[in-house]
Image (cartoon, rainbow, N blue to C red; front, side):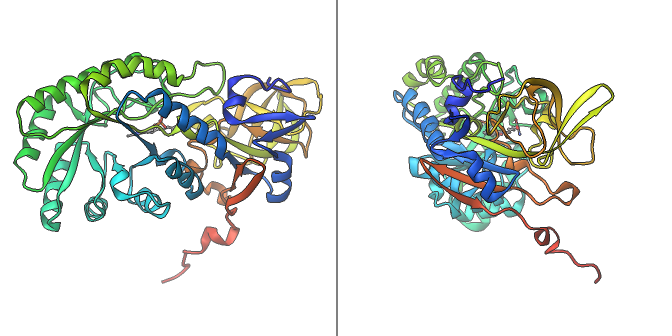
Amino acid sequence: MGQGVLTDTRFADAGLARQGGALHLGGVPLSAIAAEVGTPVFVYNAEAIRERYRSLDQALQPLSRRICYAVKANSTLAVLGILRELGAGADIVSGGELARALAAGFAPERIVFSGVGKSDAELRQAVRTGLGHLNVESVEELHRLGRIAEGAGSDVAVGIRVNPDVTTDTHPYISTGKSGIKFGVPVDQVGAAAAFIARHPRLELTTLAMHLGSQLSDVAPFRQGIERLLELAARLRAEGRHPIGVLDIGGGLGIRYGNEPAMDPERFAQAVVPLLAPSGYTVYLEPGRFLVGSAGVLLTEVLYRKHSGGKEFVVVDAGMNDLVRPSHYHAYHEIVELEAGGRPPVRADVVGPVCETGDFLALDRVLPDVVAGDRLAVLGAGAYGFVMASNYNSRPRPAEVVVDGSDWWVARQRESVEDLYRSERMSP
Ligand code: LLP
């Protein structure tokens, strides 16, 4: 399973290679990082992120475009800094992500704010900061935004996130463009929402937006969604009172974790550019996983081997609190040795230390017959990895490291045990 033969796209996209058996990310042997920083640790390859950004940007060259990185995928300042330097904007969904994007140096006008449940405080913060645009997800939110904008005496560029009612082929938890789920304004309410904006002295409808779901490999839903947005935008523009200049087609471009197809930027561009180029709109994209997912690995150490109930277990020091995707979505993540040891294959569950049977990184997986002290890399951990980590079982969250060529640095220190209860009080 990927041992030694690191030629497939998962390894190439990450910038992973073996030199004399030792797994390298970029120019750095991962064992050196594990030895110095300890495990579990997330490691991201800056150059791999840059390559992904450039490949997408290049493929979409015929369009007037802006790639707004979906901060939720990985909001570590060092990662944000890499994308900002490339010219990306930022797509955020909370006041916390706004603060991070600003701290990483994104200009407010290059930030777009999406999300189905923005609080008053978050809306106020957004209005005060003067963002590129704010995607509203319900008519009620729009009314509230209108009151806040008037109160602040600030003009606000608004996008309506439309629910285009498009079916996608992804996990139901991350399918977001279908009627009957919580996201977006239903098509039949868009007219009323736009009319409210047109009447409002402080709001301006600059954008129609959608986000269909995450980890998509099929281009057909994008084409359907874009066609619906174009139709709606044409109808609203014909009214002559909406200066719509941007179509925000969301994120969701899938990557390869196992044997599933990935979204190739060229194939994506071939599907969407012919629809979008003649329209003359500036196109915004909000990719997260596509830019950072493959570029990250989670390093973990084998603590124990165990044989129980006719099964083999590999107990490692990373658990569901560090990387929740396997247990939450039954997501597949490739697992390889840091040092190829030529061990025979074994079929085992790779499990963490957390006190839940659902705490696993892989089930029924064929992997080398590793022993305590061996180190493993869990691939495809750059997106929705650390950001979804928790302190469950009072486990400090892992450190994060960035590799750039042959340099590397600790981008976030491992949490300490004291960090866990620093803000607590035992009595009044
Ligand atoms: N824009 C909006 C409005 C979104 O809700 C999302 C993701 C994105 C952009 C970025 O999607 P991406 O390009 O990364 O697929 N935790 C899940 C994924 C949740 C995605 C939520 N929304 C996972 O680990 O698979």
